[in-house]
Length: 304
Image (cartoon, rainbow, N blue to C red):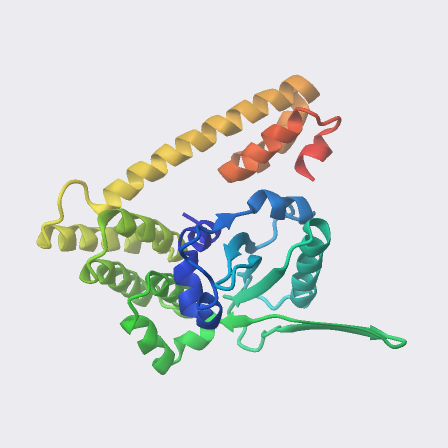
C-alpha cells in the first residue's frame, strides 16, 4: 500500500484526524467515491515523476450537496515554490472541466519547517486572483504535546502520520528501528483486526526503511513478539511478504505484456528504450499505458 491508497482507504479517518471541521460537515452514511480517472484527465503532468500523492474523492455534505474533495500530499524533502500555484491550477481545472464544487486540501509531509504554503495570489492592473486552501504540516505533530495526542488517539490514521514523521525526523537508524517496532506493536495493543494490521504493516514498512541488517533484526523481534502474543496462523511479516510477492507477480506480468505490445507496434528498440520505466511503474500506471497503446500513433503519446 502507498500513500495514495491509504488516503482513499482511510479517508474518513484521515479527515477526522487532520481536518476535523471538514469531517464534521460530511454525510458519511453516503459512500464516498474515488475519482482517479477524472483527476488523471485534468493533470497533464501526472506521469512526469512528481513526488505527490493526489486524490480526488466525491463526498456528500450533511446539507445534501455533492462536493469533490481534492487532496494534495506534498512529499518532497525540499520546499517547492510552485506548490500553491499547482493547488490553484488543479482546483480551477476540475471546476472548469466538470462544473463541480471542489475543496482543495494540502498535507505537507516534507522536512522543511519553513515551507508552509497556504495561498496563491496574483494581481496586475486591477485584476486579482486570491486562492486560499486549508493545509496541515505534519512536522507540527512532532512537538511533544501534539505527538502525545497522536499516541493517545484511537484514529487509525494517527499511526500513518506517526510513521511518516519518524521517517522524516529520525536520523539514527537504530532509533528508527525502535520506533518502527513500537508503531507495529501499538496496532496489536489497540486490538486491531488482522486485515487492518496487515494493511498498516505494509504501509509503515514502506514508509520506514531500514538498512538490511537492522531490518533483519526488526523482523526477528517482531517474530518473537508475535509468538509471545500467540498470534495465530502466518505472522504479519510472512503474510505481508506473501501478498507483496503476489502483487509483484501481477505487476511483472502486466509489464511484460506492455513491453511485448510496444515491441510489436513500434519495434524492439523502442521497447528497450522504455523498459526501465515500464518495469518500475505502479500497476495503475501500467493499466493506463496499456489502454493508450491501442490508439497511440507514437510512443511519446503513451508515456506523456
